[in-house]
Length: 85
Image 1 (tube, rainbow, N blue to C red):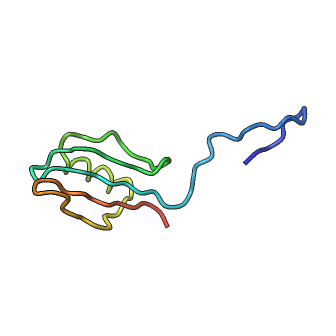
Image 2: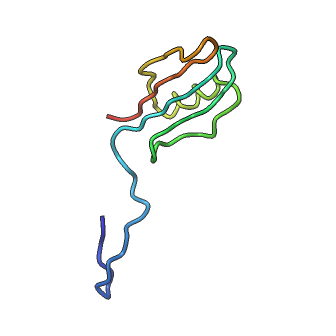
């Protein structure tokens, strides 16, 4: 989205929040250890913790909902979380 400044030159608008759905894939071990977090570009997050339950707690506090929990190997779990709409 662009707006014009006083001189008529286009100026990029910054600071406008992206609205819609935000998606996070959280990978953890079955021993409650954080492995990795993948997110949509503008998804709001807190820095992940080594403790997976604490990372999940932070994301739920922001407003994410757990949509699915999937085992991805014998000792790894993927959490699919969505925020918005």
